[in-house]
Amino acid sequence: MDFNGSHILSIDQFDRSDIETLFSVAEKLEPYSLRKKVTRVLEGAILGNMFFEPSTRTRISFGAAFNLLGGAVRETTEIGSSSLVKGESLRDTAQVLSGYSDIVVMRHFEDGSVEDFSKASRVPVINGGDGSNEHPTQALLDLYTIEKELKINKKTIDGLRIALVGDLKFGRAVHSLSKVLSLYSNVTINLISPEELKLPPSYLSQLKKSGVVVNESENLEEGITGVDIVYMTRIQEERFKNKSDAIKYKGLLSLNKEIYTENCEPNTVIMHPLPRDSRQEANEIDSDLMENPNLAIFRQADNGVVIRMALFALVLGVVDKIEDTSRDISWHTSKRH
Ligand code: CP
Image 1 (cartoon, rainbow, N blue to C red):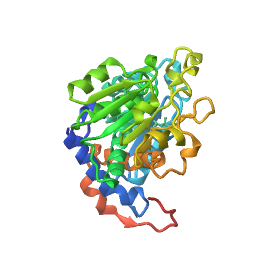
Image 2: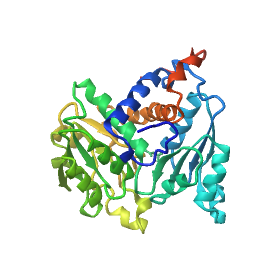
Image 3: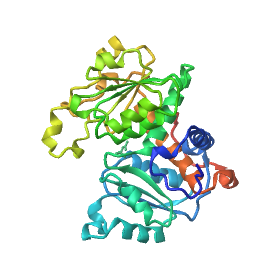
């Protein structure tokens, strides 16, 4: 893909060489994301960070990533504070925002909405999650995390065995992740969900067509046996017609120390795109796993910053200019990994 000036709407746009390019730029940007160095390479640029649905990680990490490259951020945090509630169309909104911004990140509750918005935008648009459809940058940071975590045990994504657990029907993070994993060879994916929340057929057939070995099950213990990664997810109650329908699925697939210890190999990595639902009735990852060094959920969230920095640098065409304005930091900074 030619990143320069492109919209990033779906993980389908990426092939393996694009991912290698992105990850190599991310490695180069690690000193900046870890606050060891400062760059002003995007000084003067403005990000329109348009979130029409709740978010903590995606919104803040996109904003932080842009700030860390020297750019400024303007944002909307809910649909109620935008003129969409007055009946303005997404396309008019796109026309207006592209006059105010150099790049837009957008999250919206409708499938396909970000692509629709991009058609009227004069600046690149990045999908920060559209309904239950896709969350491409989450898949990219997940893959970056998987690669780093596996490397510790001298493993690669080729040959990966992963369990995707939870709401596979509505979870856009697993939709994008399953697609990107189909680019790798000798991958086995155990899909573990209640029958009604299985991975939709289109994603399943893409996996099978690309040679991924897929096993479907409703049983957590069976599905996590022998895998390298257990990827837990939340029941996406906001996607159900009635929230009360979601309640019956909460707590069916919860990982705790006992289940982990009895079924997983010692170095099995635990991931979750977050937010995890920590309420007692759901409790996808029990607090008794918090001290487990293989719990990678916050390393995974941290990786969102550097991956999003790399994407901005590539889409705005400044990768070769990052060092030009580079200097060491001059303030106290906490230790980061
Ligand atoms: N993973 C993720 O998309 O988190 P937020 O909803 O907090 O952005």
